[in-house]
Structures are given as structure tokens and as C-alpha cells.
Length: 370
Image (tube, rainbow, N blue to C red; front, side):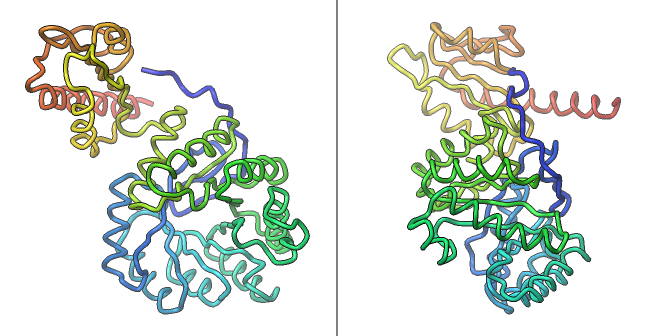
């Protein structure tokens, strides 16, 4: 039962993406991006529903053509989560999805083209209350910046971002967020650090093209963790070559580890050793699968022996300390019952679900009184 995060967040201007606030004192939001063919409306809607169920606050959809824009409109009607349209080059696509109810436009003003086209997009966004995301990527820097710097650098990323920011500043449009992503952790982190001191808008964090599920999770956790502990970042996307649902899970796990978001179960579990009195790894694997649907924040400790077990178990909402012949369960720091190892997962799941229901009821009562 841990206290609030000690991290002091950078203060930023708040924008709204649909009903999700980004920046200011809003919780750091977690987002992902569909990898289905956007024109396949059924498949894209199904994937967005899976992302919604995983807890995604925002979902981005690539809209590379006018056909995809029309499909986007049909997708938007069938989902609840706010949608960001990812658009490059063709300003008419941006204008069309603005008409169709997009919640945020991901564009780079510099690659939209002439000033009148940028103005048309910004005017549409202003008229409909749609924020813009400027997205700079080390892999697609402008040619003159590539020539100036010789290779992608933090300074090059920031200069590119500030060019796009200048477009919006000249049009008196402050409702935007910015990302400066790179696959190299040090480049991305330094670029975000520099940019954080130069604009007031919220920052969208990500280590782009981070890799597969395991390696990409590690890179993202290190890079985003460095920034988040410094108070930098208002929304995050974990870029994995994996099921987008995994991006959402990893995103929430990163925020939970820093006590920046409380959603679902925070497991404290030992790696297991020969002292264990039950199979910790098997127990954890089964519990994680069985309890993925629980959204109420709970600390659950699963410790296999009597050395560290009681100490860790007492600090959790529910804790299990391995023992012989039976394992001791603690609830809110107090020992309440013993469980045999042969039916451990089923009985522990029941206790956790009961505790989650109690906590949900108590939280609702607290909100009602306030």
C-alpha cells in the first residue's frame, strides 16, 4: 500500500483529446496505434475495442488516403475511445477527418505544404476544437537538417519540432502537443529534455521503433522512465513490434512502477528459489491471466517463503507468504487465513476479487461524499 509518487511533474498547457485531458494536472494518458488496414473497418473497430478493454485512453489510426478517411468516419461511430488521425502530406485528408469527428490530428505542418493549406487545416481544427499533435521522428528529418547536422541528433530533432511549432504560433494556435522520437534512447531523452524547457505545450513520449515485445519493453521502460522520473511527459505510447494491446499493458506497468497511475493490480512477486513452498512462477502466470480484467488498483504480494514473505505481504492490500505446511494470507497488513498449495490460485483469485469489490465500493462512497 504505497504512497503517492514523489515525482514533481513539469507544468504544461492542458489540451483535450475527446474527453481525455492531456497536460496540466491530468493523469499521464496511455495510447496505442492500430496496425490493421484502416479501410478494413470491421477489423480496425475490433482491434480498437480490444485496446479499449485493455485500458487505452487514446488510440491513433493511420489515414493515408481519402478512402481511409471515409473508413475512419465509420470507425469513429463505432468506438468510445478518442481517436487521433495520423496524416501526412495531403491536407485535404485532414480537413475531411475533421468533418468526420476526429479527436486529434497528427500532422507536421511543414510537410502539409503551402501556408494556405496549413492555415486551412488549423482553421478547421480551431473551429471544431480539435488539437494537433506535432510528431518529429529521427528517421524522417527534413533534408536540410540532415545536411546541417550530418546525422540525427537531439538538437536536430528539437530544431525540426520548433519549426513546426512556429507554423502554429504564427497562426495563433496553441492547442497542440509535441513528440521528438528516436529509436536511440539517449537521443530521444536529450531531445525531450531540451524541448521541455522551450515550449509550454504537453509532450507525447515514446521511443520509436523500440523493437519486439521484450527488447522494446526494456528500451521503452528505460527511456521513458528517465524522462518520467524528471517530471517530463504528459502522454505515452510504447512502440512495439507486437500486438498493440501489449503496448497498453506495458504503458500502464511503467506508470504504475513510478506511482504515476493506479490501474489494475500491482503485483509484488519474488523470482522464486529453492526456499519456495509453492510454485511462484506458475502461480503468478495464472493469476496475471485470470485477473487482467480487474481495473481497481490493488497491491498484491506473492512471496514463496518465510524469509521475505511476511514483510512484503504485510505491506500489500493482499499478500501471500509461503509456509509449511500452509501459506499465510495477509489482508491490509493482518494475517487472516492459511491456504494449502494445491488449490492456491483459485482461492487467492477469490480473495483478490472480493477485496477489489470492497475497495471499489469504498472508493465510490468516498467520491459520493466529496
